[in-house]
Image (cartoon, rainbow, N blue to C red; front, side, top):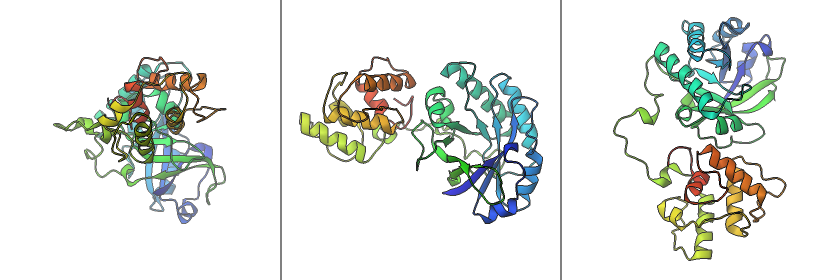
Length: 326
């Protein structure tokens, strides 16, 4: 993992020599917001970071009120003559106007496609965990994701392939007097050359063989626990291999409100791991109204019938890595 920060005019003047000495590998600088707005310290931050040899990226904050294509144009105009190592970033994190998921995602796609047309680059998406999970559809989630989720070792599951985790908004770094956002990044946020196709999503590649269910589902101890419970309760005869394949899916029974026991507890643990709040009861093995509401929220995210019942498609949603894959 690479240590990174993201900054804007809110962070004031930055001593990038001290920042680099503190072990920061990457700085992502706010460039633009909406239309006709360049961050007041954009140029100063860029020159300072360039002078110490730190890896540089830029982000655009998406406005809800202005044209997405014009926003893409302004972002590219601001950064096109500057050197940067990091995939450009679209920051989408607000819905004050109350748009639905499709409307929000339509605007993102318009921005992303126009930016790609202008620059040759795909973007990565910065968003909050809950916002990204609930407000962005699978078209947007084909892009790599930088997820804000604080106080945890890894971000909640959102449907994105995660290349960055913003784990704090109140960090302290030498060379910056204000609180600063702290991030861990993988090397997948780096780009090579203009027009490089290495950032294209798998859906853009021809003749890709469809993946097996277990290849697009979580693997490991959570699945093993489910397989063991299905074997214990229903003599399912499953191989306890931690792969959520068709045999495991077909062994899953329908579970609904008022159910009790270990299978319900596993469902509740999976909901919690997906980021759903089951307080105050949490994983108590009782399928009550709190669990039912969480299931309905999950079903809404995956465009399923919101009946609160854990049937085959809801089992897929619970154990899937991404939405829209089934």
